[in-house]
Length: 163
Image (cartoon, rainbow, N blue to C red; front, top):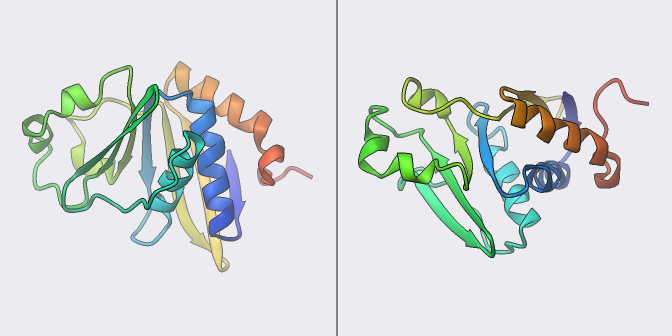
């Protein structure tokens, strides 16, 4: 699924749509260069669960936990991770439990240690806006993307090629 995101509001809307489709569980890898909008998308996912506070990338702490009613969401930023094994030392296995929702920026730095994502969202700069490519990696991811596809119009978004 490929989407054009003309502004920050559309990035947040995509995050909200994705957050609802995830139903509070799963692993999402957020890929893209610095400034591509990974944290902005994470803000949208958090908005789907009612979180209205500031959302910043946990670059120095590696993970920011959010306890939101019945949802435990962990926002990882592995940009400064020296070695994937460091995830073991911060309790990564417990944080990546099946009953949690994990948003992981710079997941490639945890390669070999991290489990496969349900969904990978790749963001890139395109013509003054952003382009988002969503790809399922598990059966759960397939179900999530099917729910995203059915709710795009309600969020003012359309996949490229849709008229």
